[in-house]
Image (cartoon, rainbow, N blue to C red; front, side, top):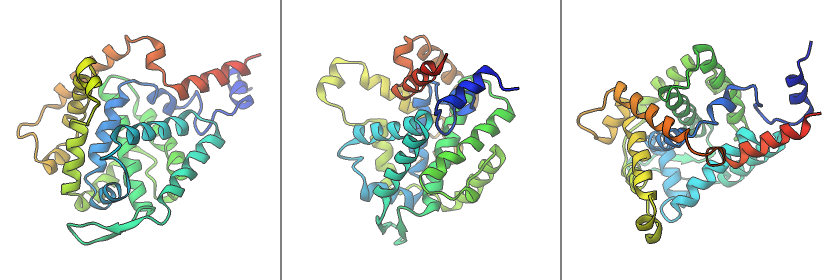
Length: 283
C-alpha cells in the first residue's frame, strides 16, 4: 500500500533523489562547506584534472564566481527537478566540449571531457561530502553510507560519466582511490590552487569590515587538515598531522555552531525551492 508521503513524492517532480533519499539528508548539512573545500584540495592532486582547471577556467581571476557556480551546480542537481538537473549536466558538458591541453610538468595530453577525469572530480566530491558529515556526527549507518554513494551515480551520469565505471558503494569508492593514487601528485598548479583556497582574494571592504576572512580561514584550514594523510603528504604540510580525533571534534563543534544559525541562513535556495514544491503538492 502506498503511503501519503510516497504519493506526494510521485505527484511532484522531486528530481534525481527526493526527500526520502540519503542525498537530501547529507547535503542539507551546513558543514558541507568544509566538505566542498576539502574536495577542491583533493581534486587538485590529479595533474591532468588540475591542468584542465588551470588552463581553461577562471579560478584565478574569478575565484568567488567559480565557487558560486560550483555550489549552484550541486544545488540544482541535488534539489532541482529532473529537467533542471539534466539541463545543468548538459551545460557542464557544453562547457567542457572541445577543451584539451597538455599538462606542463609531464607533457601528458588531456581532454577535459574525458570520463576518467570527470570521474575523479565526482569521486572526490562524494568521498569528501560523506566523510565530512560523518565526522560532524550525522550518524549514517553503513547501509545509508552505501546508499548515498549509490544515489550519487545519477549525479555522475548527468555530466556524461558512464554508470558502469562509477563506484556505487563505500567499498568501491575506497578501491577507486587506491587504484588512482599512483597517478596523483602535487604540481605547481595544485599548490597554487591550494594557496588560493587557503587565502582567496577578497574585496578590501569585505576582508576588513566583515568576519569573512577569518571565517573562510577556519573552514579552509579544517578542510585541509581533514584530508587523508597521503594527500597532506603530497602537499608537504603539515609536518605533524592532526589526529582523526581532533579533526572529528573540530567538525562536530563547527557543525553544532552552524546548526544554531537561523534556518533561513542554513537552508540554501535550491533546497527551499524543492521543499516549497513539495508543500504545494500537499492536498
